[in-house]
Length: 320
Image 1 (cartoon, rainbow, N blue to C red):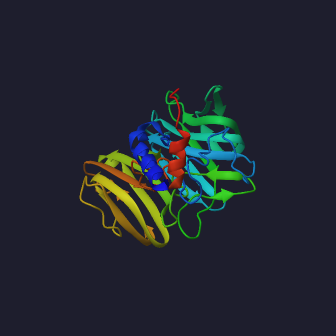
Image 2 (cartoon, rainbow, N blue to C red):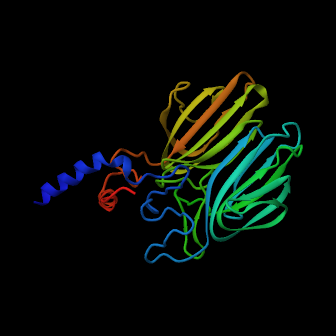
Image 3 (tube, rainbow, N blue to C red):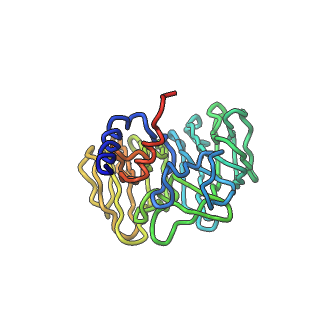
């Protein structure tokens, strides 16, 4: 009887997968830290048993479209990330956005801000200036005024420092869950590498979560656009998926052929992925890592297991 029941559940999982739980785009997932059905870190979500109440910040995505200078680096002194973005020189209309979600209240240090605003969903827009930026419950977008004739932002986004064993999420019981997808701590398994630094000039920069994977895209043209990165594998061997076009290279990694998306191994050490250094033609670099999902993986944790069966069973009933 038990075997027959299990077969019935397996058959149902195939037929209703499209209607079961699906991971929202750009939501962080950290395998080994939590599963999406346990806690998605959406403001207002219920706490799990034994989990402490605390302020939470989810760093959702970053988009910078051709700013004069885009400079991100891991700032260990604050245990987080520092952004320095400006379009003050020539590309004055270059837009950029940083999207955050906050539950409770979160403070950010703004070193400087010129023609920068904060849009809070449901509450409107306010001017951002140097000092302490306090954001409360909700989704917030930090962005520049492209009609102002130039903008500049230097902001710290607090988060966990890089774990000594490699990538992965972080848990800070004293202040709740802190997540910084973006160049900060990578999602999923502990052997993922970490960005230590990203510098882009006149290039499009974008990153965020997509179906449980942390993805980055850098795009530029000719000698006006350049990219320099420091991808750090603290120890052991990591794995990333790479695709590129044009003048893109890394002397320490075996990249696939142009326009061929492939997983590559990342050995311990620092790896500098660069683009636009020859000043000839267009270029693009796509890098991602995280758990690969399959049809039966309803909770997006990279495997099919009892948690997926529970999600399936909880979906029984009439459609809304």
